[in-house]
Image (cartoon, rainbow, N blue to C red):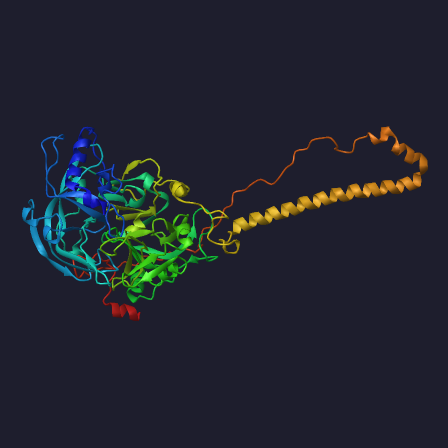
Amino acid sequence: MGAMTLNLSAALGALVTLLAASFTDAATEVFQVPFTTDLDVLNATAGLYGPDGPWQAAVLMMGTWKRASLYEPMDGGPVVPLYPSGLNFLQVLTTEAGGEYNRSNASAPYKEYGNSGDNTMRLIDLNANHSTEGAIVIDGVTLVNNRMELPGYSNANATIYAMNASTIHFPNGRSYVPEVGTLGLGRPFDVLELPGTGIVDQLKAQGLITSSSFGLHIGSAAFGQRGSLILGGYEENRIIGPVATFKNVLGVPVVFLVDVNIDVEIGRWPFNASEIGSIWEGTTDEYGQAAVKAYSGKNGSVIIDPNGAVPGIYLPGPTCANAAKHLPVRYDSALGYYLWNTDDPTYASIVRSGAYMGFILSDSDAKNVTIKVPFTLLNLTLDSPIVDTPTSYFPCHDVTSQQNGYWELGRAFLQAAFLGVNYDTNTTFIAQAPGPNMNQSVVHTLKPSDTSVVSGPVDSFAESWRPYWTALDAASSATSTDTKKPLGAAAIGGIVIGVIAGLALALLGWFFWWRRRAARALAVEMDSQEGEEMAAKRDSKEYRDMPEMGAGQAYPVYELGPSNVAELDSPGKLAVSELDSPVKINEAPGSPGVYEMPVHSFASREELMKR
């Protein structure tokens, strides 16, 4: 895509030189990694990648580079685009595979550690067959700090999976070589038997960041929302509402997904169905069920991994199929994607409205937190070489756990979610992230003892999307009045109160009308009894000019005022807390290329299935 026109090395060098003129002597507590879209802010399409995005990527320089002064351009490189993730190694393409990394020119230390070939490589796309060939090496990398603080850059040693070949194959026979690698920010652990030290651990040891931590929000490249990757901290404006916290097991969070629903944040209901709600059915995958049991999760839930290394949203079936029933999409088996029917009038109504897919996560305290991913962000584009012309698609995939026991929420999810990790406290944070119209950036430092983060108000989510959503009114709604979204209980209660109040006012009016009519009838009766003298008196001018009670006087009219409608959270499920079950974990992955949740700690899966 547009990234092909951007010289990353030249752009990054220019950025560092420009920032140097404003560097201060303030002590660095956080390290802000630039994204490809930061390197050419005047070009709206520069730094964007496909063919299933658009995506933006973090950048760093391969090799160890230094310079004599701040005003000297940082020549060298090469500069490579990488998708941030919780992996504990980097994944880059070598020059042999069409990439930028040349192992023969690598700076010290350089050590070839082993070989890896994996024909079902799951780091790139669970929905595609990815074949790779390469070696695990130790090499230096250089990170540039996007903040105006000294020293402006840092060198670190990294464990790198250098791919000499990398190809993604599709059912229709097409294939392509991915041009973006993976930036692993995780902490290595003994189970994977990988050498080296994590990047954030090294920056902490150098005194450049306060804790071994990071905060990530990939953002929406399609809407010009820059990504955010802060090492040692996070941006407060990237976090909205309640924050789910999770304990890590061997550096990996155990995150339970308990429900998935479809709803609307603001505006009218854009779907043809009168009600959708939950589209979740759990899973019958035996490995997924075993993983939940091993970590004492709620029945019917699954373990998910938020992973920026993969593009889509990968769920146990038939979750995506259930969602597709309510959307103008069709499944293309030759591609393996749900394609939007852009000619359907409900397509524009849905992707421009406040409709969203809600992912309900249960954290370590059995507290449910919903991450809302607007359909605006689930309208991505397939491009060449996957298809001949740009094609809109829905990035949801029904898959098995592939015997790993967990599923993944990739970049499509992380457009709308904040992911933070503090390895010093073994804590992971997941929260709602804002839309493009977000508040001013405020950077916070994560201390080594921190187990919480600061977040913004819940209502800022709708505000961050308001300029980009078209809230449907009665005339533009895709449905008739018979198929609009049902009102909540509180709204119905408000209507009932209003109706009762209206009836009361009507009865009160009828009562006064009845009294006045009765009085007139009584007067007629008195006329017949009092005779002509009394009748003459009533007909006199003096009597006629006497005002009736309240006549000619102004009285204020009072109506029932509007009231705030508060609804109970939906779905109102009870969170279940169970005692922790310590598990000894002994399984190592079959390939260094596979990022597995360490769930298989039992004697054998067969024995666990019999329990």
